[in-house]
Length: 398
Image (tube, rainbow, N blue to C red; front, top):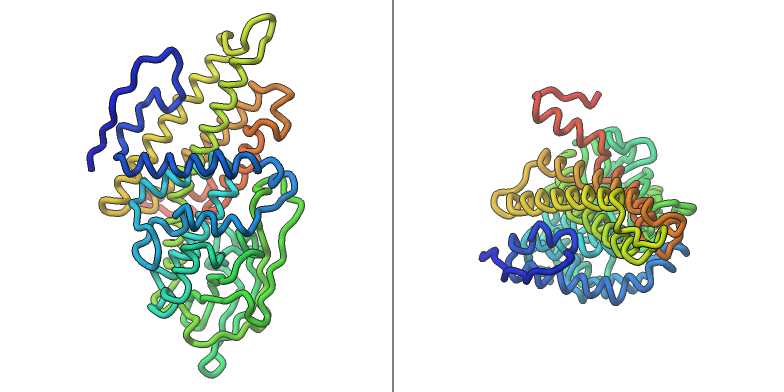
């Protein structure tokens, strides 16, 4: 890989990440992938996001468009997947989340949870049946781990799978499941007599019900569901043969968290650029808002945090591509970048004044979404404890 870029000509103003010259850290393929996804977001998604967010919808047909774009399971090898490196996947997540966290959530759940669980732990028959269809967006997947009373403590899940002859019978409830009402297949995790196991569950199986969660203030352009399994009978072939214990679903979550490390920066970058553009055109006391020292202090501080987060994301991506990033390293990235992205989105809203509370401007929408991102795929508190355990050797989760 040649991580060089032609030096940019001197300009009078720069976009925030141009000050860090982060493109120099990317190869041409990575830059091309980011540009392709950015163009799709700018032309197809951003013109429609206000309406989708306000009406709390995400059109199902976007799945096939994401498939054509090549972002579904793009970091997996074979089965119709693009086979890109981790950094390219991260950059795609960043561009998608610059549009809205709902777009990145859809792609992340499809590729890093639904597809990855089958790719890593499934039988060859399961892979051949589902992965090509999921890669094109012909089929949509979801991932059922979290329950109403068990989020940070998934080991306590109440969903059970019991043997009945050669079949499995599943009973339980999953909660806060992205894509649940859109999904054709769900990866469901359940207690068995032999510990936690995973199952590939077609959503048209009798006894499987998805109930959409309404009245959300966050991730409105994303479908979030409750999954109910009432005596769902599955053949033995539905079990993920290589998934044994809680480490299996947690490894899937680690894949998805990596995408968030980059994705949150997309929301922050879009918020910051929106605030810069607004401050340059908005006049206060007969001069641009951007000409005031307090405004420039805010913009400079946010740019520093955005750039630091980007450098961290790229570094973690290089580690992941080389030998694999450890869970606590992904925790560092998720904790820092989501926390700082949320702070940036909120601060940008203040620069927009009253206009900032409308959907005409993106920062408050991003901030609302990032409240969910701060919580899912491991709360900030859990990531703090993961880092603390790595530093001290002491587990403080209980």
